[in-house]
Image 1 (cartoon, rainbow, N blue to C red):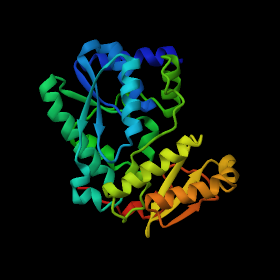
Image 2 (cartoon, rainbow, N blue to C red):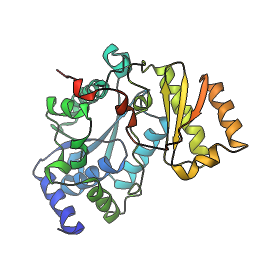
Image 3 (spheres, rainbow, N blue to C red):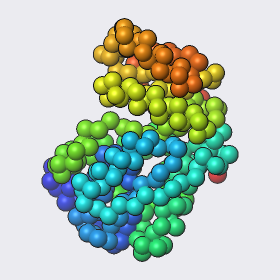
Length: 276
């Protein structure tokens, strides 16, 4: 099946769902679902974005921009996951509590705007990773049209390019709490430290990177291998260390293995995680 046929299949699939709300981060996955929902349902589709200390302000603004680019109705909901002790304690099931809060808030909204179904942007490749948020989605009867249509991450990017979405090549940008080592509390203060540190790196031309938080206010910076030498060279090395210390980090390290998405999962036994 070519990309044109895959696009048509996704739109036709969502058209059968009638009114819906798309959990919309502004990343490529949710943007593709939002675009398909708009084509399928028009004004009966709405994109909903969470605003909380877990989400960088830059990502909120990006979600607004992408929603406007798509042309879909867009709502912002305030989520309160950072007030939940089960979220703050930052166990490997943290994402379950975050997504539970998100879907609960969207449910409150959809009752007001008459959009009975919630869709997310999960794709087939997400099923093979540690994704406690998928359990929260199941608990709230959230639909995953990309999975239902058998679409992979590569398919999603091809669909985004087919629809001329500006985020077709945007790197993944999970929530700020995903940067904090499991077992270290995901407090609003630490989330703000990480957000500011990553904003500084972004302002210096970095595109794919993470600032990881480890015990003792230690920052572990991951960039793609081709940028490691740049960060280790003057004047950026000194400026970066000074900036992160100013933000509250006590030590600043550079990971010589480079950027690896989700690598904090390797620090814990995920097989032992149990979610009720």
